[in-house]
Image 1 (tube, one colour):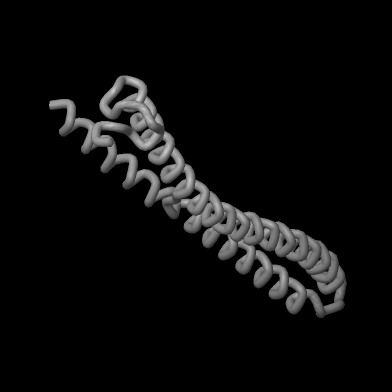
Image 2 (cartoon, one colour):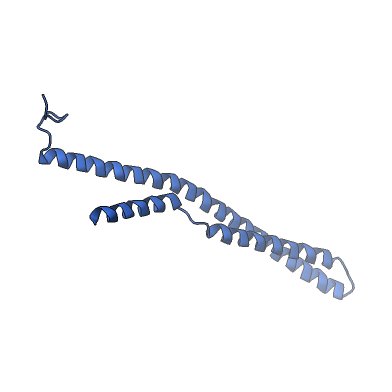
Length: 134
């Protein structure tokens, strides 16, 4: 029987067109959500790395602060005639330098764009819609 749709009704009817339009729209949304899900996993790893670097930087800052306090204590003792403070001060400066490098690296990673594929697909879709509406 020609002219019948797979659902058993006549093809070309309003309900068939609405069903096909709805199915196409849902397929489109599903494809975009799948892509967004993939990029969300990548973003999670991206932000986990940034959080890990910031946590490491905070830990190093705490150790730097402790070494600085010890160094100041020892320097005061050196001022009074005792001399192990410069070694501890150098360790404090080293810890602060590592912490600053970690923060700088985290800031640079934070500037990396995310969801690039999803945004590119949305732009293509928008351009296609603009061309079709003309």
